[in-house]
Image (cartoon, rainbow, N blue to C red; front, top):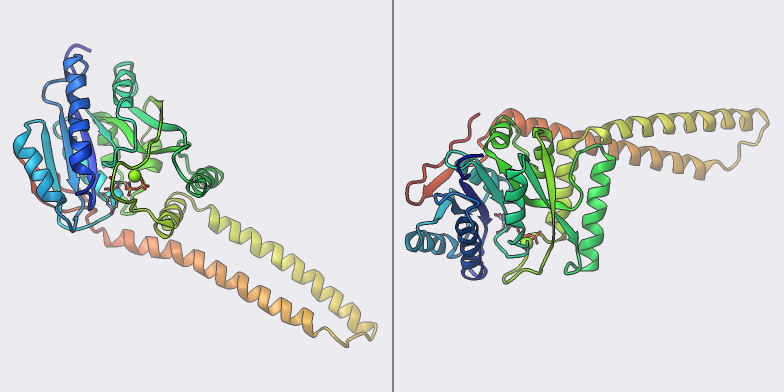
Length: 325
Ligand code: UDP
Ligand code: MG
């Protein structure tokens, strides 16, 4: 490569006034370090995306952008969730950058891994996944649920990189590919592998949040996992079909047994088995309807073709991206 790539570090922030003052200098320092090492171009930037925060996050970002030339900000018109905020940032950064790195703003992901990611890009990878090599700082519960999630995703046939969250380098080419995905249910870590291109992984250790609290309590984590599975795989539907088939076979055997009992004159009792059957079948049907409903809900959302993000403000020379739909 002849000229140095322009890097945009894209950071979604939601109610992060406690963390930002601590991590902003670290991001800036990391960016400047890479510029002075001659790895990336002078025009590289740190871009904070405010995801409709209710606290002073946007005021902080605007202040940083005023003080530092290398910081830019983007403000969504309301809270749309991590994935949408990140997507808005990436689509905007794509207009200016050769490469982007997405990272959370809480300092949990090791920033020194960015240099290694850029090295991998210079070595020819279009997507570089940041992969947690350890989960020492997570609670046992978070670790177990997270690892279970990756295993289930893999079993369901969704191609996700094990232990990779959204700490990822993507080149302009890869982002152009991502832009062509029209789905509303964004699950970026599952979409990146579908974009294709040459990829590699960079390993790092995940630290604890520097300040503030996680926005992913158990309930949100579970719904994120469920969204991930139902956005990427139709296996649950085929599982229900096989389950229905097995239940049919079992009930057929039961019917034959009942007829034999009747013929032999042993018709007393049977009440409990009947009740069991009714309850069981009712349960199976409800479960099936629930899962099918989940997919219909998704189809419903997709047909609305709502924009995935709307940007209300931006700093400096940044022209916000529009969601092409
Ligand atoms: N975030 C966001 N919108 C939301 C929730 C979270 O932009 O609705 C951002 C948040 O500011 C952080 C990142 O997403 O930069 C990851 O969130 P968090 O650290 O709370 O999740 P955890 O690391 O605990 O999974
Ligand atoms: Mg975090």
